[in-house]
Image (cartoon, rainbow, N blue to C red; front, top):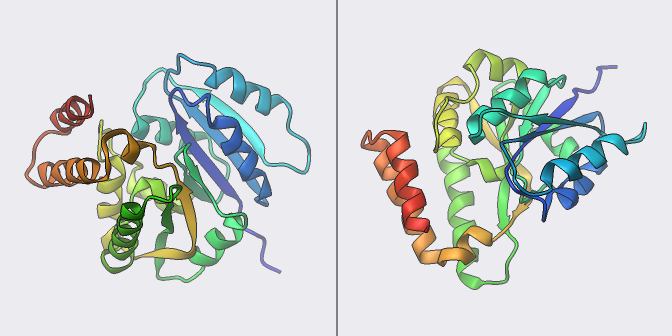
Length: 240
């Protein structure tokens, strides 16, 4: 009987005290899973809350580890988490994204075919707003037909593959996009037949149209060769 592959879930966080407990609670349904939370310099109670969960684990629940990073930035945080991960599979999860209850089974089954190099989930947005149904449709269409899922779709791949790819590039923005583009020539990026549910907070802050326009402009700027630090400053400036 083949031994089941283990999964390390890596969650980069920054000031997520309002949601981190619910995030950790939902992950306890996974089997043969460890959870690594990498804090990038939170000023709220995020670290304290994760430490409480770290100490309260039981034998039948996934182990929770906390890293307090001296260098902020999502790419750096995810690379640090991967560096200590013990799992055969790495899954990178945004703190405001909910995995489906049987996520560990979907991850293993999606990565099983030899031609699959990585995977991600379909996207659903936790809001009844009709315009967000269009966003979901376009994201899932892009993911399936162009093999281009983004970080909020819970990208996963084997630890060995991640190491061979050299991890995430040290970019202040677009690190998930850049990583997936490097993965594409290596094999198929499969989309699991299940949804993750992500928070609508970024669309609610500026509105669906403006948020979508900003995202597309940042992608265009990336293709035009604008330095990532300038893109990040532009992104922050527009959001503010």
